[in-house]
Image 1 (cartoon, one colour):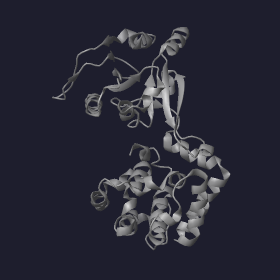
Image 2 (cartoon, rainbow, N blue to C red):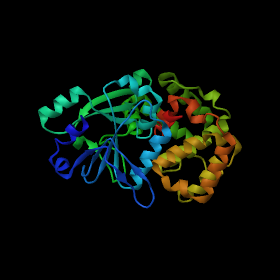
Image 3 (cartoon, rainbow, N blue to C red):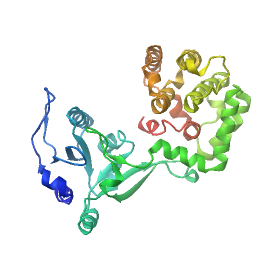
Image 4 (cartoon, one colour):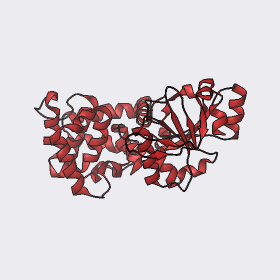
Length: 325
């Protein structure tokens, strides 16, 4: 079925499509036998692997690392049953690719033959509507290859549209009450006013779910930790401090990563910084403190996960990352 689908692309058919082709890696990276190998697929070679429920994470990682090291795009393909998406073996794939995985089934092939072009079924895990408290839900759509971002050599395909975190942010912005609450919350964070921050937080928690402000530990520390996170997200000082934005790593260390009662928000910091300012994570002093804080908290659930969806309203960057724990 995969071969027939790919062969509907003239370039791919001409370049060559093979089943279980022996593929040798460079410089001792090993070899692989992809279920289907396309010598030319949207600018480079691609391996199409059929995901089975018995495939374990170490094998998934090994294949992904091999193809990435050798500049080969990896495309995981599943069958027609959406119910299988809740199995661990499938989660190990789509939770490593922004909640996205491709499928092929009879209906897709009928449409592909009729259109004389390759088609896939895109399965996407996306935040549900505000009325359903942003609870993730599956969306499926038959798409052409042009509706996917195939990325650079070695990467995996994704939709050309917004990622999970951006969808959360978009839903918040479209909801007048939530968008207004977020603006008000940032304003009181700038003054480090924990008394005013609590009611706004609780207002949002009642609407989308999550723990109340009073359960977040010391309000004095929480409002300052959140002020630092908002500063990173907005790229403007949103916490009461004399430290300038030009010295952001120092601000992060002093007001977030060093105080003992604020270290529980290190996980949130890494997700937000990774999305909007990844260079912060490479600053040696910041990286060292993150490593120390992670070790201190061990396997305990990070505070941003325990907070619930209310946290994602104020800090959508990292919302998808919080699904993976």
